[in-house]
Length: 331
Image (cartoon, rainbow, N blue to C red; front, side, top):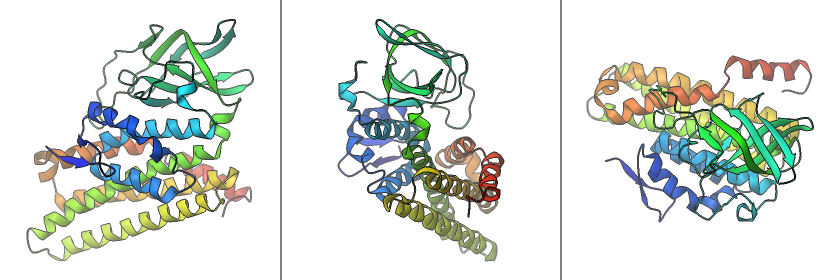
């Protein structure tokens, strides 16, 4: 079984095992504090996870993201009124949900309606959930084990990230606690920075794919075409190194706040996504169909990365960057 020891003296985590990853999640509190302070280390952690296994990374990244969001709001998780413990595991459910509503009653805030794309809602204990209100979008913390929370059992037919179900969740008068003021979730600087963190995971997957191609070349005398593929992948990794290092440096130097941070994150994510997609093509040409049909780890990584990259909005994100250029705010 493919295993790694994460973050120094940590329990071994089997690749592709959501339960094992969630068991490790509560031990990561100190790592969430790195974003915005030692951002290179934070991105390095996520890149390490991506190189190990994308299912593990996709499980742990939202937990880390939730902890950084709470820290940015000045909220101690254990002080929340929604049953948080030291063993709690977190997700962030932020997809658009026009029918989901929040109501402030005499008993506190209550959420009602359905939220789509709630990753691991059937496995987590808690979540941060965005809701549109008359005052603007608000963020709420809630417990997922409450009897008023109903997770959809609709089929999940994904071939990539198949263990990371993202079902719809229906809330029926579910107790929740607000986190931050209206507009906090999208308005904070960490929103952009966290997006670069996801890109760091994609970069880690490229590292692992490059290692697979390198190992294949070392097993036999490589011809010029094999060397070309290795050279191309090495160049891709250099681009990833420079892009992530530049983003981390700017964040820690205070140069990634407001619109500057949003533009930096959009550009960094676009670069990493394009490199990762090109790397998938390069690796396919270098290795042929054999590993896709006979190497379970490689085949899973390719399928997982293909799905994971669709978090990037591709041409729409590039068009948004282009709009900033015409507005005179882009570079």
